[in-house]
Image 1 (tube, rainbow, N blue to C red):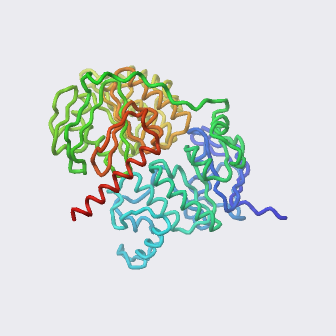
Image 2: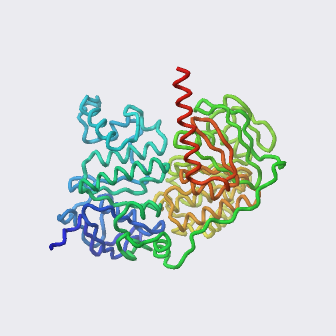
Image 3: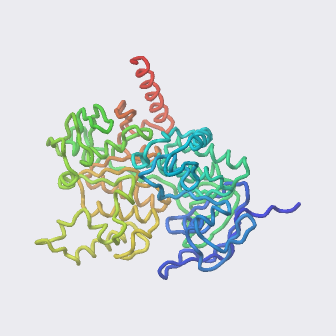
Length: 511
């Protein structure tokens, strides 16, 4: 019996940036009609390998063969011509266009920017396949990160590619939404298409992939069938040593009599929040649990002064703050926010590591308007060592860092600020297991130092295991408060779905 030709064949591949070797002698075969995982720590080279196959990078050495054709030209258009489409971790959409225009960009039936019926019919057929429930006429700029990720996924599928590279496709999705994506992947596989799946979610890889390639330091460690693998075996290969998969021990929760560092009383906003009441005490980690669109991010933005509070009361250290609290005022009060979109809302990608670390505390390291360069460099070096930022250059180009190392730079900005309240919105999005451990340790360490932490994550296991208490949200309202130790992923999801259905039933009765 003849062995079928691989969908993708890579031999002796190498790539360098600025003298740094990011891929070295890569050899891998990706079988047609399979779901093939690429895993490794941030900076291991998995996304770079995906970008070469997807036409975004040109290799310095080696050969790439796609569906039996040797690649001699590298661009996304060339790759698409060979049947390859890529879904990026850092989304590449046109924000001022609507969903349909983005999905069919470059392949539209529309002329002169005007949608025609054919595009809508194509979109409806695609939506039946994906079941994402996105408004086709919504402007992409108005969508949440998770919804934009769905648009990127639909765009790749719409190109009818035979090979689809998915770089962290579930990083902003809830478990329910991720499962819907995995249903789509199963249908693609049944159609004979090949999926290259880059992810840090090892449970997803073990459940939905056929083969896995483990990478470390720009090299392939091994490629093997997923059958027989465990989370521990994959982590050991990624790290090059045996590792225990544990959650850090939380500090004791503060007494309920301790004055809150932050408190919301019946707060409403024009972004959909209604009657929100919550408390965060010094040294306490409080989780927010809800589906995408439940109001989690809106709570974070209101507490950081990014969205105005239109009703109710917001207290910091027991003192009421005006509704029109600005971001500048919130920072001065000791409030810090790590936003879910690190590239657009958290980092200045045109700057290096040093100014990004210093951005939130320029006043503290300046005198008479003059920045103390020595202190700035010293603090940046301390953060590089503390978080293990790679590359370890004080003036490294953040725009070229892996997603995980960009996240570490963003966390460093607030680690040096020593805030009273630290709000974390998807702190480990797109981050490998090694970096995730550092982030989890950082969260617990901040609480141990008396910082109040508000934690938001689509990964419910993360919220439950890192929190003292959790608030459950649906449709912009908090409907329950539970000790984290009494919650499981299953019970939390059950409560959220039950509340969502009850809300819809109440709306139907009212109408």
